[in-house]
Length: 393
Image (cartoon, rainbow, N blue to C red; front, side):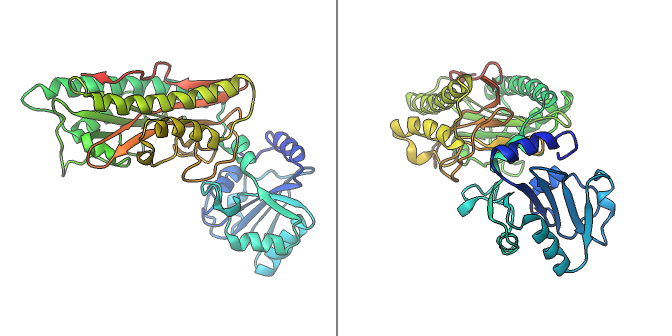
């Protein structure tokens, strides 16, 4: 969040990138990055702007009828108001004229998770005389999506808890599969929710339990209305995510079979596992050498493995998503060169999932997911012990 404490680092980053300032814009939550950076509380129904210059102090622009949300704005930083569109445009012109400006903008909508400023606002800023509008992508990674030390510690704790929940869930499923009352996908989901609550973890929904061809839908959700029992011979996918209050999500996917797996299942599993490990290897090698790597490059590395095994058409989503303090699917760099053109670098501070998958409609879905975060000179993979072979229960 923007504050007198974080301002010097932001200004150094702007100067290093030869950017005159970062222009934050929001209207009724259309740009969550701006909302998170500014940190307003209360009713904000009109357009707002904040200008963070490479030199000097930030300035804010809000509507005259909404002064309340700005009560925590530092008193030595200018805060002006407008009522008319003419006043608003004059105020914008005063800060952007003849300047190189960063905004939450992705040329060609290459990264939609970053492309938060409406085209009309970009037109306004350009018409106001901005020399150039550039993407704020690297600024977002460093100052919005990066994890703090406390958040890292929270993530590490959550990762170990949900790992054990997944393993225990498979054990329960195997025991019940050989009983007179096999457990259903939905029952197992509710059992895991109870384990989360007992551990003090929160989740927005889920977790997901998918059996057999149900897992061929990456966004399948079990339901009580359409129960599916887990039986001998089934392939079971468990995708689970949870966080401590005010922490960072841990997000994992585990695979098991009830009874010995077929060679076909093993072949698909090995392709997914090896793709995951290719992504992990690239991330860890580049981090150890302090060399930059794009999210797109890591996606390419994982995808190449699955394509080489003949399953490329069934890997239908990106390799991984950003995770930040505000969202499980965050605003930092993703591992993606399929759905979007992720040019941003995996820099120290950012965290993300690594989760390649193969989804063959009507047959099977297999995914393996770990998380990673980057620190100077290393990448940390969570959980500390992740899946190497299919679990057999």
